[in-house]
Amino acid sequence: MSFQYKDIKNFQSIDLENLFLSVKWVSGNHPDKLVVAMENSNTVFSAWDNKKLVGLINSLDDGCMTVYIHFLLVHPEYQSKGIGKELLGMVNNKYKDYLRVVLIADEEETGFYQNNGFDLAVGTKAMFINRF
Image 1: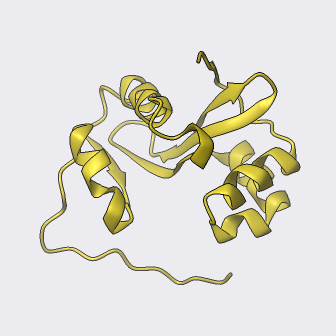
Image 2: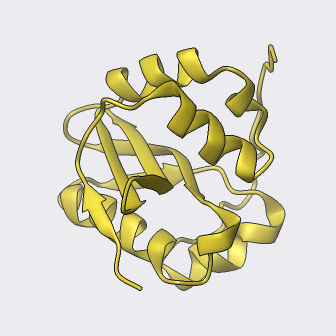
């Protein structure tokens, strides 16, 4: 299978809704907000199977030192096909001169990120105010 990778920020809300809900992320219940979030992200890379959005990564950065990967998701039917690794590599390549790449991972996903060069933070806890 070959996929097309795009560097775009303009998405149809239905495409984002379908992708986010496919992985059971509550963000998918707010597709119009996701459209705005992608438009306002510094970087968005996406993976497509013809016209179907099957993967996405977005990041926010400070322009020189730190980039924060906000979302990385791959539709369940397309997982384990190298899409997540490719998207992560695209972000790492773009920000190769930055001093820190940061993300928050679900516990079951930490192995994937460690296999892609990330280290677990020691002595820290992720904290949120959720308003879903």
